[in-house]
Image (cartoon, rainbow, N blue to C red):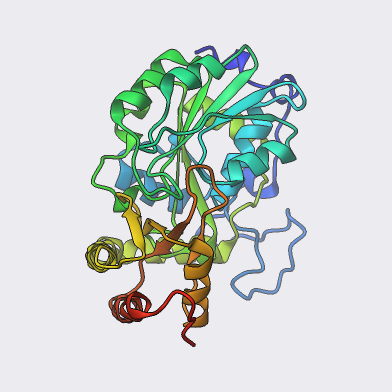
Amino acid sequence: MNLENLIRENVKKLSPYSSARDEFEQFTKPMIYLDANENPFSNGMNRYPDPQQKELKAIIADRNNVLKDNIILGNGSDEVLDLIFRAFCEPNRDNIITLPPTYGMYGVLANINAIENREVLLNEEFQPNVEAILNAVDNNTKIIFLCSPNNPTGNSFTDSSVIKILNQFKGLVVIDEAYIDFSKDESWLSVLKDFPNLIITQTLSKAYAMAGLRIGILYASREIIAVLNKIKPPYNINGLSQETAVKKLLQSTMPTQVRKILVERNKLIEALSKCEFVEKIYPSDANFILIKVDDANFRYQQFIDNGVVVRNRSNQPLCENCLRISIGTKEETEQIIELLKTFNNAEKSIIYR
């Protein structure tokens, strides 16, 4: 892969904005800061945050055995995904490839950035159709998006499919690992150094229980990170989010919570397998389960009328009459299991309130 051939011409020529904190770092020793036009009255948040999030990146890098130079953080994964579009895709000329059913923001970001989105459906097992994907590639194809574990299907893509795409596609391959911590499979971070065209995105929103902080993580080669840093907003992660994320990561509650979620996932799968209205339960490597039911609209409304919000995914390709159910706490799982019993025993024409 020749990275220079992938970067937009205007981005190549771009000089990134240099903020006051980029030019002069804050120190622990007393200093008088008169460089950033900040309010001088201290309240813990009157100063601009670290634009490079060095403390937070150091913790993330150490946990994942990568260098800080391989990381860029965003205001949620959506921001780092958008940075990829804006750095590498020329509007009204380039295209990307996505694999429905998948995370809908890839298509939204393509539309926002005036990039053609070439959709290549997954096969019936929700695996990439590698031959069809590679046949859809042309000289203006910049990125292939692989969501693994996939949303909304919950399954992981086979190693052989991903490796073939990485080896044969000359553009960027983005593997979205938002749900990797719930999977039995190893993260693709272990081979990041082997594929210069590989970008991996993760998040603190799912397994790390920090959805409210909006922190997305992107891993890539130093060269790709350098390009993205040219267009990253200077203070995109606010100070409260940085401080809270550092504190939460150091508490190390994630492994225990993930184990509990997996226990509840297994319990819910077992209960769903006994439901007559459930026609299929798809394998899950995520913190949710996709199920095919007799009538998704009716069952969705049944859940709503009983105080439970699930997601109707019937509008997605290959997901007719499918509901996606996130995994909750032990108490919530017990309530859902009891509710499923009433659904099982109810006539379809009756909605219990």
